[in-house]
Length: 350
Image (cartoon, rainbow, N blue to C red; front, side, top):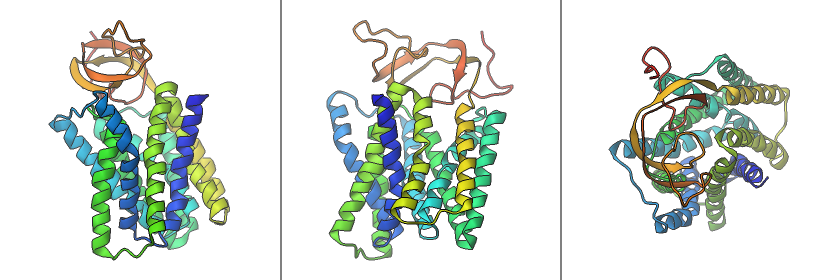
């Protein structure tokens, strides 16, 4: 129950960021607001990362992982939020919230395209439902709605790249990654925003923007990671997938935005899309080649077989460890340990 509540609170905080940002855009330019939101996230993660550093969890990034982190900062921290905030100026916050379901679609399709991940018929049906829902929402808002939908789709594509890159990073914790992304991307966007237009927002608005970033981006990520460690990634993601619907509900209730038939139909299609994408797992015999890396893990997941006599297997911890070559079969997702290709190039089990 504790983990379930953490996941729900994470979704609520992230969902609330869209209507809150719609209000803040009345006083701030998109680049300025994007910068403040991510600086707020960095401030929220600073004490967490400091505690991890004090406990011995240090940055251990090689060149490849540093490049992945830089890409995640660029796409997920700099480009994605600005595109989203510009879209919020064109259309309703409720429509933008629902369109954020496209992030899951973008992540799945990029996995197939870039990493040759598997996406079965159920998963492709989910992609189709999401695309249809996006077209309905875009058409219902006229040309401004079309422009906004394209911007949100571009933002979700950026976050899809961010998700794929982040899932491949080891040597850094989620809190540390969020701190780096928030500090670098936040400072970059704020600097661009100040160069484009002077900052006229009162101090109360600036403080609110930082608080929204701290809660909706920083705390939300920390709560999601905590829940995923107890619930597992699949169930935690299923709960967090409610965030766009939470944002839409808050937009309609808090901002007084009208609810039309297009929203209702799109919501049904998006619920079907989320359900289909989350159920699209597969299992087969696959090979894990020997590797040495650093990341957070536990010893009851079937992949981390090294021994800690003094540590219970369900306790999550982080250190440099070696995986021996392993061949097994089980249902799996394309996570850090399952980046194998699907096709003739897949090594045969032995």
